[in-house]
Length: 188
Image (cartoon, rainbow, N blue to C red; front, side, top):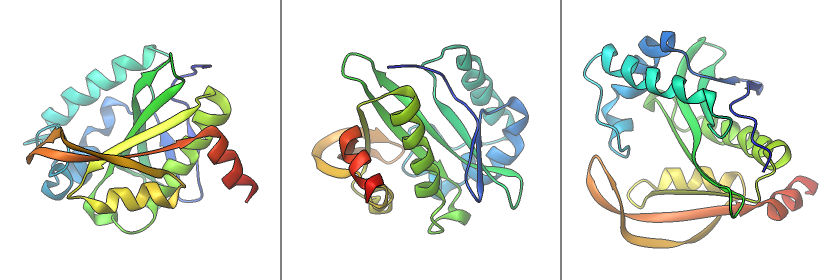
């Protein structure tokens, strides 16, 4: 793989860029303090903006590593961070990455995450040269699976009680897309 780290990318509605600690207020207001979002996450609900500053401080330090892929999702219309999309797990041996994402519940159902995931997939396949992108979600959160289906990912299976989030153990539904699959979809 050709690791290049988190680079800035744009879509019609979105700016995907590195987080800064200065994003703490909007990220807290829109995501980390949102109980609906945090039901399916592994980090605890943030009680105050300082909790969010702490996590963003940790995340921004990791940008020095070119294998670190973590974007703030900024909705251009409001110029605020409304979510995140990342590839926190990199498997160099097999040329694979695992992607994760979340956005504030106010923006659910508007096609924002598929839009962000599509541009991230393009970057990872074309520039980073990954062979496989995979993702998993809590079986109780089927909307996350619909995001994966919209960008061409295929269901691989269910790993029973293989994940743990803020609700406890859950069945992990796993999806993936290979570079060859993605190329075929692009040709259309």
